[in-house]
Length: 242
Image (tube, rainbow, N blue to C red; front, side, top):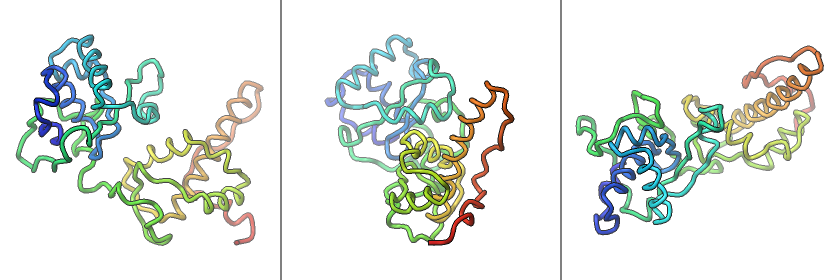
């Protein structure tokens, strides 16, 4: 991320810490959040040892350059808890103002790999195809399709109505469940209306609950149910329209 290149050297004098920050920024989204390369990946990018990388990450955290972010992001990609790297958010206000990304053909001036969170991509996260993350869900018309974005949050009154129609309660829509849903759909590039996203979220939570029930049933020898289908809205017709 080019904002890191504009940080005055006097503000971050340690060259090793600065190099780690530059490479870490290369894995973050356009808003500076959600970077989770492993220490091994940063070691390859910087040429520093993994131990040094960890020490510099600690220094950057103490200095207020980075903070721990939403750890559910790494959990969405890596099943094993013991293999998940820490998810970091870069403190853009701590450094220079956000600068635009390099234009095509300008090359990578950070000296870091072009991978995103350890996965090679054809287009960087936050490219033109991504939705405007500064848009709050409440600014969308209920009939205006939009792509899912990380800051999306369901309207609680509408969610309550949809949940009740599906036989669920708001308490079953936990932060982890909603985060998992958003992360799953953020990378897909699907455009849906607010109501369609709410319906898909309800299906997501219903499936999570069904999966938990199947796990219990499997241990007791009972038959298993069906898999997740975010297009299934038959439950909407099971009760009278409001």
